[in-house]
Length: 170
View 1 (cartoon, rainbow, N blue to C red):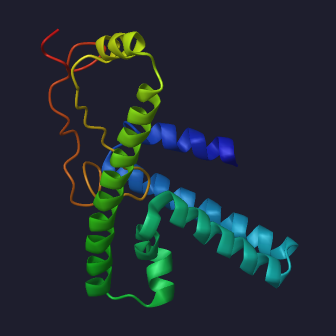
View 2: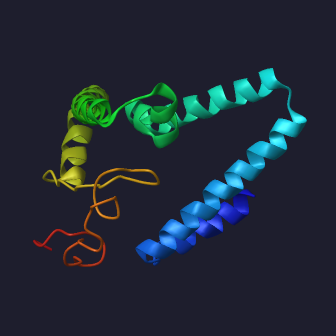
């Protein structure tokens, strides 16, 4: 089943919106069939625990946004206003977490560099060079923002930079 899903996700890259929706429908159907099969094998308490673990995994992957997924939002009885507020708050919290992680990463780097000799520190500084900011866009299955999302602009990546990076000074 996993191999089939991986093949389906690979096929989504060049698919039209209609083809993509059809693939998601097939995926949903496959998942429902798998759950029906599992419900014949597992006891009710085991099925309940499996669903709990699935929600935990979804929460790890999407953070607070897992609350706004269709299935969870429906089960919680969330209305569109609540979903919008939750998504806005989750976005704010994600930004705060990114900033904190960046600060922790900088502190860790600084601590490690301090352990080097002055000569090694100079070499390290030369090896690293001037800061280079690179935007890494993340999103994935189930993401609600950006290209490919409902209402998003598909194919809006912009011109491709030179091979190996996008630093125009090279």
